[in-house]
Length: 629
Image 1 (tube, rainbow, N blue to C red):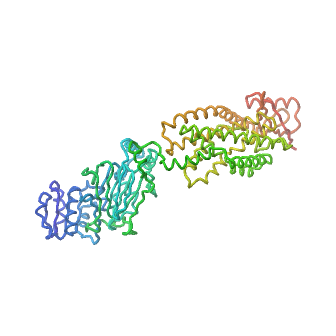
Image 2: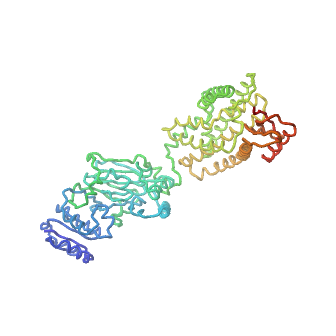
């Protein structure tokens, strides 16, 4: 006998269904009379009702080993999507009447069936259905993103102990967990879609454990605004797959089963393998992972915070930036403290790098200078100084400044002595390239400083420091300044040394900010040092911006005069190879003049006047004449 169990308030819906069930021998029974049910007389169950009522009958069908078909109402969209049920009533009824040849697993939470998901704590947006994004405009998605992000203030970490089916004890810190058995189109199931299977005897737990607001924002933006499902688990999310898991947090957490708050922790989640022959759509089985290993649990939580220190820190509030653990801080700080001191190795490498760089500048060889950049260890004490600035550590700051000062003095003296010893006083292009620092050089230094700090904090990418050393070039500008001292050229010394100062302050500020973002110092401690160096950078930026403005003006003049053709009387002239030389009293404009013939004195005066009118400034014009034949 087929029994159709239905909710008492769904009689009108049942009357519609009866039209399609006339040919079947069916006994109709409302849930209010479920106590009268004799399971031994049932061959097949049909059910219509709310989720709790459906789960009640699923439990009965499981215990009695009876097949079950769900006839969902139009309002139960998520239920229809989860089990791929037909939307048309006649198709839905035919599917429900057809006993399934395959059985699905059932997930229980403290003895209660979980149909969609069980949420422990708070885990936005993992506990939401992705249908919330359907047909939403980009602006609406941004609003949803900000609305979800606002909830971060209420999210607090709790230290949680989990015990899996093999009695493995797992400890971690998280704000919430989502347990699920099927691909139910929630954001949690989207992250592990390829791992979900409805009949492998395992369920999955997706764990939300952001260590910073920035990290959480990244995942939220991808999921809610861009709708991109990450190929790998986000840094703020972990994953466990097992047949049984006991969850026991240090602090009680609310438990929602299918969006209804019903329990509090501790809880036990357990799967009954292949427990129910439920009539589902073909698409449901197509979405299941067929490459499963029933003997091996899957656990990916190594990247989540697990130590007591992190749990206690994060239990207060989620910080804006990631907080480095005590182990991470101790390892990096020990290394930086060692590198902040002057050592024999440091001095030998620095002197050798200076000699290579100075000779490379004289022979105008970029490759030789790059070799010196790679060899020079001057970046080490600068990064150490940035940590001292961040942590307000006087010994680290003093050692860093002392080492930098000794190193710079050694470079200047070495380069000056080489300049005095070489009987050549010729400004090469490699030298002149370091005599016009602008605000752009400061930007390069800032980016390089951030890269240096990030590489220093991650042992896996320490090799990238070589690239940073090439990008920012610390020793060559000091070597040029030393050559200026050897030649007695104060202008050369001051402009080259300004480039080094630019690199120094940019690296220190950016590295300190990067270490702060990576969580190596609380913001209240870092504010003072960072504020001081922001002021220092601003002061250095003044002459750099003036130089940048000058460069813009020079480029404008060059563009204005380049290939300028006009008549100065009897002859036509054209200007090429424009070069501007800035002198103390008056600037020089040097150019080549291609003329149709020899110019008279008056024509030369007209040429000068035309040039000065076009540049709109007083300058000395020095021209080299070439003649068209």
